[in-house]
Length: 234
Image (cartoon, rainbow, N blue to C red; front, side, top):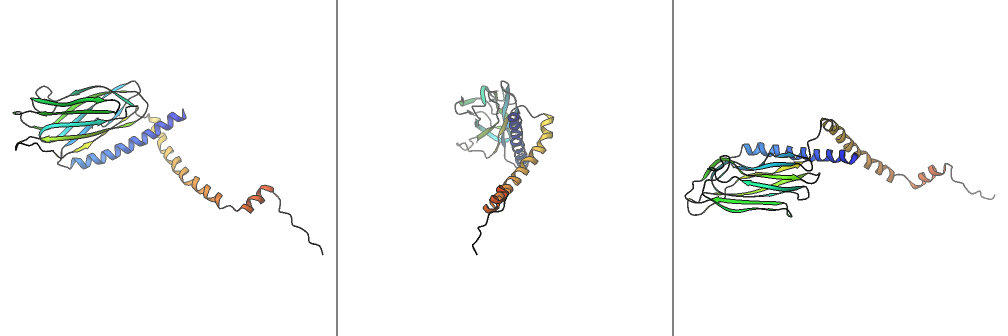
C-alpha cells in the first residue's frame, strides 16, 4: 500500500511538471505564427487493461502538401491496437491534405515503441490550409507506469516551383499516466512536498554534526566514567 501511494505521488509530481511546462509552451506558441503539430489530448489517463485514443493534430498550417509524423512511447507500458490515418478531406472532413493521396509509410514497431506515418498529395490536388487531424491512434495499457508520447513531425509545402520545401513548425508531445489521482491524493500532496523538503535539510545537518563529534568525547559518553590517571611515587 505504501509503495502504491508513493508511486502515485511521484507520478502526480511528474505529471504536474509536464503539464506546467506544456502550458507555458502552448502560451508561447499561441503568439507564434508558425503552425503546430501536437498530441491531443495532451494528458491521457487509464488503468491496466483499458484502452484510450490520441490524435495527431495540425493547427494553423498553410500551403501543406506532405506530412510525416513519428510517435514514440514506452513499449513496456503501452501496446498499440490500431491507427486510422485521416488523409484526404474529401473523405475525412476533419483530416488533412487533398486527394489524390500518395501513401508513403504507415507502420508500427512495438519493439521500438514507434509509429511512423507519412503521405502527400499528388498533382493536380490543391494545397491544404487550416487545421486537421493526421491520425487517430488506439493504445492498450499493459503496465502501471507513466510515459511521454514523444512526437516529431515533418511538413512539406506545395511544390509551386517544382520542389517541395519544409514548413517550419512547432511540436507538442503528450503524456500518459494511470487514472488521475483522487481528491485525497491532492490533499496529501502538499504534506508530501513538506516532508521531502524537511528530510532533505535535516538529514545532511545531522550527518554533518556527527562527523564533527570528537573521538574523546564519544569515549567519555560511552563509558560514563572519567578516565583513570596513574599515581606517581613521591
